[in-house]
Length: 443
Image (cartoon, rainbow, N blue to C red; front, side, top):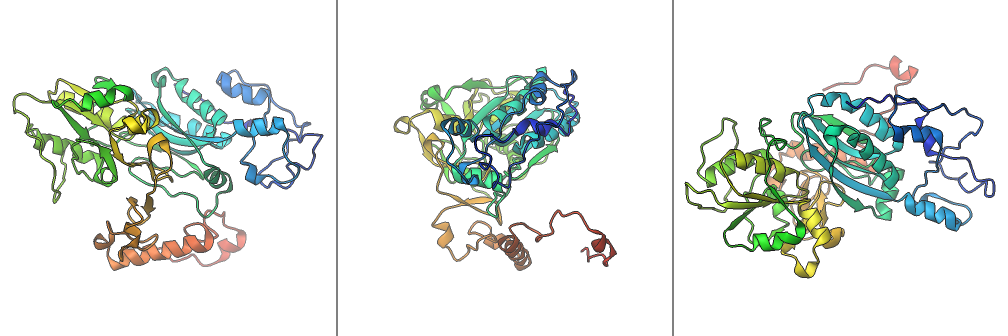
C-alpha cells in the first residue's frame, strides 16, 4: 500500500541557491523562488520512499524553458541543465487488483503538485490510467512512486516530447492553455487531476478483468504481417470521431460514440447472446462482419495507446473467441517505431491532449479541436458556415440548441477577455469585503 505524507518543505528540493558568479541570472524570472541556504533542511523520514528522501537531502535546480529567463547568456553547464529539464508527456496505465485505490489519491496528487507535474490520472478498483507532463526527472519520480506498489510495477508507457511553445504554456499558464478533451482523459497542462472512478476505461462492465485474462500482444514491427492475413478481422476499437481522421487499411469501424457501445456492436455483428448491460448505438450505419456463427473469427484489435484493446480483448475472450490479438502500445507506438514508407496507417491519430492529432514519428498533426463538442476538425471543416470558434462545428452545430450555443459564446468571451472561464476572480479566496456583499445569484 502506498503511504506518503507530503511535507511543506518538499518543494525546497526543487530550487537551489543563486549562483554567486551571476547573481542576477534569475532575478527577473517571476517563476523562480530563491532558496535560503540558512533555512534548515530536515533529515529524511524513514517513512518516506527512498526516492522522496533524496529530495530533502540535496536540493537541485529546477529550470524552465529558456524563454522564461533574462539576463546573461547561460553557461554551457546551464544549457546542459536546461536540456535535462525539458518537458515530456508520458501516458501510462496498468490493470491491477486495486480495491484500496482511493487511498492513493491524496499522496499521488500531493506529490505531483510538489514536483510541478500536471495532467490527469484515473484510479479505479481495476488499476490506474493517466497522462502527465513535467520535466523528465519529475515525471520519472512520479512513475517510480506509483510503481513502488508491487501491484503497479510494469506500467505500460508511451512518452512524447514537448515543443517549446507547449513548454511556455506549461510554465506560464497563458490564455492558450489547453482545455480537457476526450473521454476518460482529463488532460490540462496547468494543473493535475487525480480522479476516482469505477473503471480506468469505461466499458460499462466492471466484471470484465484484463488482470485475469487478456489477448495476445503484437509488437508494432509484427503488426503489418498480422493484419495483412485475409483470415484476420481487424477491428478499430476507438470511437467514430477518432476513426474518421485516420485508421489502418482494411480495418472495420464499429462507428461507436463511446467505448461502452463496443459490447453491443460485437454482440450484433458476431451474433452473440445479448449482455445484461444496456448499450445503445442507434441511427448509425455500420460495416458488416459475417463470420460463421459457430466459429468466431481470428481478431486483431487496436486503439490509441493499448488500454481499450486490453479490456476489449478480455471481453471477447469471455464471449468464446479463441484467437484475439491486439497492438502493443497502440497506434502511438506503431507511429513511433514503424517507418512511414512501411506503414499501413492512413491519416492522423487523434490524441486526448492539446496536440489533437499526431502523424508518423508522433509529429504534430493538422487537426484542431472544436471546444463545443471536443471533436477534431480540419481546415476544411473550419471553412464551413457551421464553424464558430469555441461554439460549434459541422459535427455538432445541428445537435445544439440556440441556448447552448449562446452559453458557449459567453464562455468564449470570458476566456478571450480574462484567459480563464469565469472571469479574473475565478478561484480567488473571498476577502472580508466580499463576505459583506450580498450573495450572488446562483441559478
